[in-house]
Length: 313
Image (tube, rainbow, N blue to C red):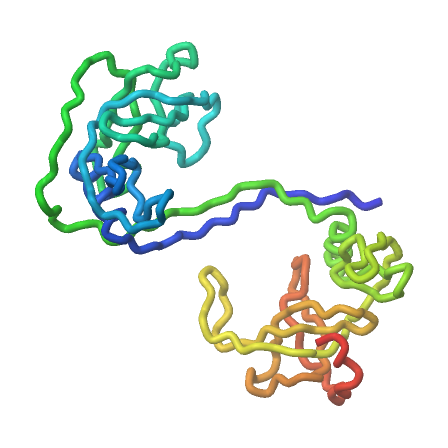
């Protein structure tokens, strides 16, 4: 049996969002070393502030300052900090109820070890040296044995308020395609395309999934398909993708390879984009050293009849 493949994979993108008046004031306040909460109709102060009362769902905008000192309500020790976390040495994740607040704020606590952390301990904000209007303007919390609970009162209105943020989202994980798709990828390295046939309905699925999505039974019988196929449907791409060296416009299509009962997708080349059509007969084009087809080009055969591929749309 071929080796089951696995590889590290990272999915990342910048998430951009605008801020309403409450979040804008909160983040702008952090930039100015001020912590703001929001007061509900029943007198509770919520930190971090939210725009709607979680109990009544009423809109709340009554911003009030709270102290930069507080009390740890619960915590967990982080032995191995990961990329992008507040500290690069072991630290504690803590929920801190700041003085003057009725809810707790999650952040990092810089402590020498787990024995130095306990529920009820007093802490204070350690401000970042450079602040831009983000939660990272609080570099972390640090132990504090003083009794100063002074509240910094902001000016009536901040200058140059923060109106939006960009959060870099990233997920690192190890991906394994499983037995069926590992065999599919190994075959592609030999310039062959293989699917698997369902023992019940006898349909051939490409790429194989290890089980029939219709019958729900395991598949194991390999079937080589192609190398030619039929365009079942397509779209014209007019926006250039980042890090993809393909000039727009180009065509991306669903292609039913001969012998397959499921269409896969691929780029169409070797023909003007406005001449691509349903039923066009195509074949795979490989580049030197590639592990998968670079694109599909017309074979010169007559177009397939609609009835030959209508079930694969």
